[in-house]
Length: 59
Image 1: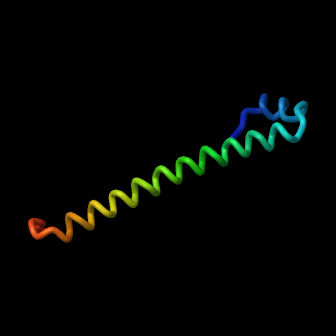
Image 2: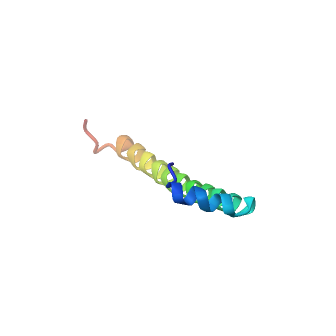
């Protein structure tokens, strides 16, 4: 993830805690995305298992 130079200058003026807040927020977003994708992945795998185990399925 690349930050524009302007934001780096802002970081120099702001106290450390603001950077911590930013990284925490990014962490939360990342966690939400991974949770969402893993949930959908599980659902898709279950659907696939159901399809494969039904008698109507012919490869």
